[in-house]
Length: 203
Image (cartoon, rainbow, N blue to C red):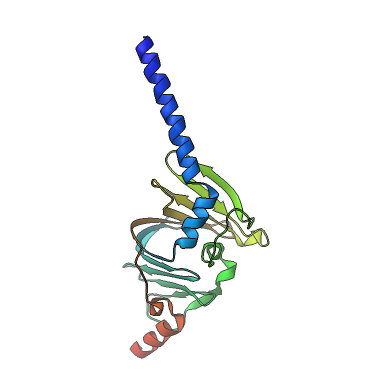
C-alpha cells in the first residue's frame, strides 16, 4: 500500500513538473517569438465551416501580410490575402474576385511583421494545458471585427489549428497537418492582380 502511495506521489510530482515546463515553453513571449519568426509556412488543411460542412486544401503563409488557401475539388475556391486585401476567386474561373479589406478580418492580427502578445493588448484569453495551448486574440480598438483562436501543440509552440470568429458570430476552423517551413515562397502565388490576369487569359 505504501509503495502504491509513493508511486502516486511521484506521478503527481512529475505531472506538476511537466505542466510547469510546458507553461514556461508556451509563455506569451515564446509564442510571440514563434509567430514573429514564422515567415513561411506550407501545410495541408481540413476546414470545418460555420454550417458544419467540411472542405480541405493547401495553405501557404508568407508573412507579413500574405496567405493563400487553395481548396481541393469539388470546392476549388481560391482565397488570396495580399496587399491589404482578401480576395475570393470562385471555382468557375471568373476573373473578378469578391474582395474585402483584410484589416476587417481578425486573421490580420497574426499577419503583421511583428506579433507582440505581451504589450499589444490583443490577447483576450490564453490557456495552457498538457495537451495544447489555446490563444484567443482580438483587436481591442475594433472588437466588433471578431477574434482568432490559435491552438499550439508540440514540445515547442507550433500552430496546429486556428478558428476565425467573425463579427456576425459565425466561425471557421482550420486544422493543419503535414506542416513545412520552406526557405521561401514565390510572391506570385499571392498576387491578386496576377491571378485575375491569368483567369482573363483563359476566358
